[in-house]
Image (cartoon, rainbow, N blue to C red; front, side, top):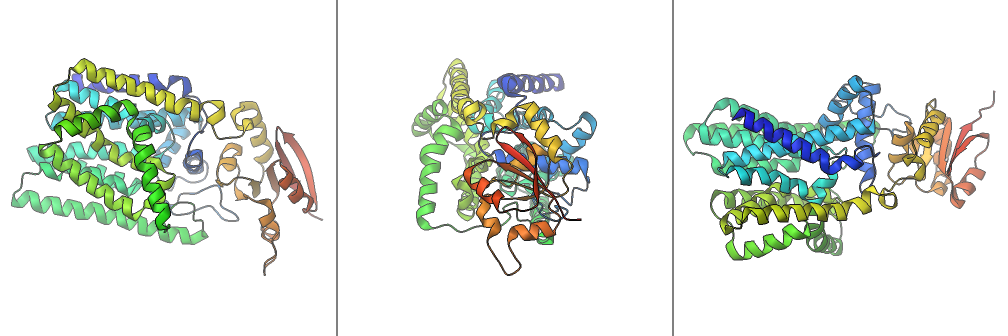
Length: 478
């Protein structure tokens, strides 16, 4: 049994690496490159400054130590630990992400076996999960969400094992993985929560389950209360730990975009989507699987209604829902009696759809979403070497506030619109405040607006030009 499971794990690792191999050495790029750079920047700061996991640090820190509140930085901290051993690199980050997602695939396989799917359906389920475009893309990105997904899939396996066999050690492991998943991204708690349908109801199990749920939710809530308070320390509101309101029309447009575009294109893939809709219409879903899926969907619906603003441009927030979709698909396949070769064919077609949907738009030159200078290792290293000695830098225009910092390994202030730095306020312009706090270098991506802005700055000296970038230093009177 253990040898067979080990073979499955190695198979998933091999296939995950195989479908990503040509892109394994890419720098952070593509959709949500800002999120990848924020994650990697925080990890590098753990490795280079302090490994205190309770005080994560970001690069856009202004004139501070960069400490701010965030999700629980388990992904960033673990990658930092590996960086201390192997050296920090984009390649290491991508391999780490692939390993994390592979463990999640294996956890999903174990769960499917536990709820009595036969071997072939259990084996193909995680591959279908990987074939989904959003997962294919993010499974090698520096995204905390994939660690939350993997931990939640391990948790649902251990909890289901306990609910069926009543071995307390498995419950403890299930609760531990649930806590970690929720601390990283709290919406992933819907996955272990849905395992309740497998509970053998008696007084002992009921009490243990209630205490476990209270413990998990309490620990997760305590962390996020702490994170919100930590944010106030330096007023660095880098992470969305609060809910923003949007108009009714924006909510409607978000819902339409999610249903019409995101789900068939990114969150399932057209081959899988079409076959699933046909089978669902014909067969429906029955039994405990149906109950679990209903709990998961209701849990995600509550999260969706509360955090709908995040769903406008953050399709990766739906990753917590994808195991339920795959479980529905597997159950429909099994009930339909479709030849297994046809299921393999559909899975293969879905991979091809993922390649067509993701590779040109996110991993090829036209869709990487970063300046050409960051794709060229020599230019990137040159920019980093010129900026590295800076104590407090100003970089931009960079709407993300983290991409330029990450690629040049600098910290300090960023801007999006240069003119806003010179608007007069009671305490003087924002740029004057930066100077008084010790600003010593400026990195700009040249344009007409930045040229006009640089004309307003006195006592500056051009250090170098690298492609479209200019590096300036501030000369202070003796």
